[in-house]
Structures are given as C-alpha cells and as structure tokens.
Image (tube, rainbow, N blue to C red; front, side, top):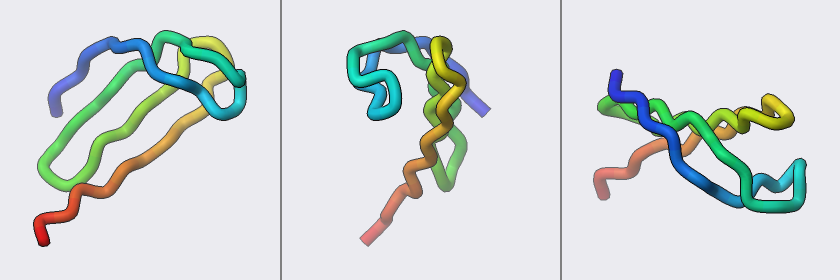
Length: 46
C-alpha cells in the first residue's frame, strides 16, 4: 500500500486540510489529519 500526504477539501471541516492518502490496487483512502474523517474512493476500471 502506497501512502502520501496531500492537501484536499474536507467536507466535515469545510476547508482545505492535510490528508493522508493510502492507495492500493482497488481503492484510495483519504484520512483528514484535523477531524479524523475518512473517505474511501473505489477505483473503476470501466
């Protein structure tokens, strides 16, 4: 699993915050460092 840090808009915080992004073959998981909100994005191959 690949892990990087990037700035993204957080829906819970309502602003751009730093997120930990973890990517594997099937999904990308974003974890907000400020409010601990987690968001999963499933990759589509179609």
